Image (cartoon, rainbow, N blue to C red):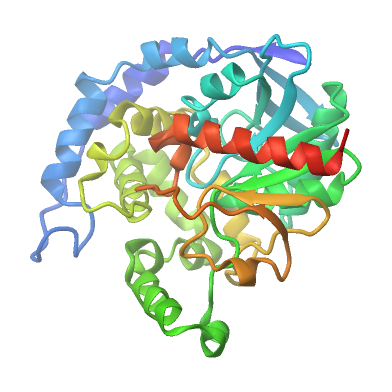
Amino acid sequence: MTPFRIEIPQSDLDDLHDRLTRTRWAPQLPGDGRRRGVPVDDLRALAHYWRDGFDWRAQERRLNEFPQFTTEIDGQEIHFLHVRSGEPDAFPLVLTHGWPNSFVEFRDLIGPLVARGFDVVVPSVPGFGFSAPPREAGFSVERVAGLWAELMRRLGYTRYGTQGGDLGAYVAPAVAKADPEHVAGVYVIAGLGFPTEADVPEMTDAERAAFAEMQQQDWMSGVDHHALLRAAPQTFAYGWHDSPVAALAWMTQKFQEFSAAKEPLEEVLDRDALLTNVSVYWFTRTFGTSSWPMYDTTGFAWPEGQRTVPTGVFTGPPGIRRFAERTNRIIHWPEHNTSRHHFVAMEAPEAMAADMAAFFTKARAETNPA
């Protein structure tokens, strides 16, 4: 375990600012709102703030308040945060971020979890942020899960919980499969029991209506990043790595599509949090290397979960519990939780921490009864 601090060279910051200043702006295409993509005026304003208003050094200092380390597991260098609560009976959690996010996703969730008596481990997925990229094709969610299980073993944890959303909703259940003797429960944001066309005959009229509405949401009908990155990630990476505005436009497009709110993105997620995440991608040059979950697949499928240990979710709908229970042992399925954005930890960290605490109390009692 090697202590790690984020220390971006000033020359990299100067280069970013210079590239933002020299942006060759595209003309605005005809059409209303975002029908053709991120509007030029909106992106120009955000890019100008990134250059002149956003304080990377302040965000760097804030991230460095979390104890960080690197370690090598099976030839793969992993960066991770390890924040202890100080409680003698602290329960450890390993949190897995999504795509196109990074460990920054949990910046505001860690404190509320630690305050509730959890030790928190946040690894950067290989190819994301400060973790080294996979060195060969064919990297898988199962390999990530094995790395996380070994990391928790090295940290001395014999019983722990695992959490994830988006990409993490695939990794978190896989950790339970890889380490069933030590995982007490799996908590996911959403994604379990999401209906498909094959499920339509079994749905009620209300469920069919909800399914039809789901199909119209931006996060379902927007830019198909799975197909795009499955086809030619190397080609698109040139633009993202060379032009910060191209990278910012891509990130803004996806974060906006991942919002269920009608309000502008900056009214749902903190602007500095978004730019901190984009900056981590920019400085670590990981727009291409982070796309391996897409280019190493042949198609898209919702996460299935696992039946080894209890499962809980932050929010059920538009998932359907009886569909999720085909492949999961669900003990926590709140109907009242709501979120305006796919990345709940960035939008509502306190609510998410409280719900996670409620689930893991139940899961620990079920898997280790007194």
